[in-house]
Image 1 (cartoon, rainbow, N blue to C red):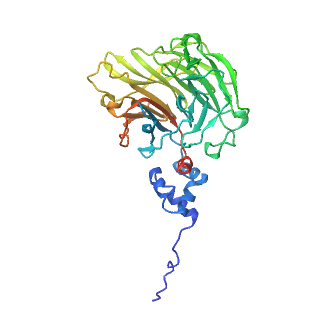
Image 2: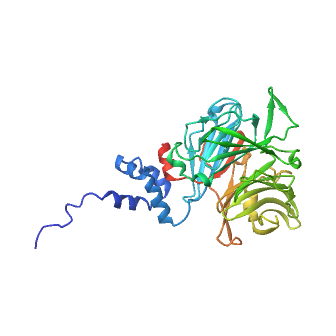
Image 3: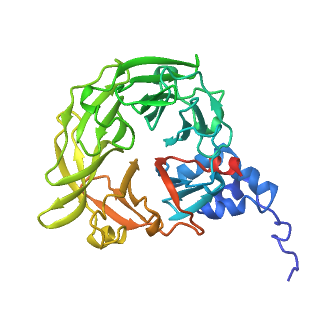
Length: 390
């Protein structure tokens, strides 16, 4: 019997085989694996590896939930968190540094923004900030949307700033004149073109939104070439055509019993998510909205025990601190107050809109500081984005 072992020389795997095996691991494990050796990091950080993961899952990247907290007294105590729904894990991110003190800090799909005293942007997992030419109207707390001009093509956010950047639309907010707030001006819409580094002035918000035109009172949804603006408490809705640059007629979108609600672009439909005071008791509901008629139909109700896990039941205004964001087929609901350590849950909308499932998110990784303001939004994220940040 021969002592020869035909596998004795098989000591290493090819790059392709190694990449295939690594692509089966969840993202948190991949991040740790990228620190094992240069070879693994090279494989994992390659853009083609993200494409391989997407092919294996046979699905579009699931949007992450970002929560950025501004500390009451010290920016050193600001914190950033990101939740990956695929691994059901939170990541404790280094806080994003604003380019200048005193600027207004907000987030939208793929980007962080500042609006005063200069408008600047940074990709969510990148510390490099880019300042644009000045806005026509300096403002705080506007709505900001990110969209691509399909006539010029599209590129992946991980490819670098030399590729075709998206355009940014800035709507509403509070204007400053000589350091004072101008409460009369409802502000024109402005659209930023990165190719010419210029802002285009567009028609202002309809006068119906005059009573509350900042992001504290408005929610927005970018859906099928339109930027929808919705009054969280007024329930007024209008959409801005990104091609024709005109506003639609203002309508009212308020299901019976709703106290406040948020409009969200979710996969192939508009979703209204709101708090109800119904005869059967308080509930947090989701409705599918027809974009043409603005008619709505209920698709989901948050389980009662989930709702009360987000709030303190002894408070009269216990639901007032609930906020909602979403993207793709995920709707996140969370409490922005510190006393509950910012608990959250998520609703996943199935391929059939009437099939929805809820689950609680794990607690934020400790320590968690107390914030005077919480910025939250959803964004798709590739593994390439994460590894390049490290």
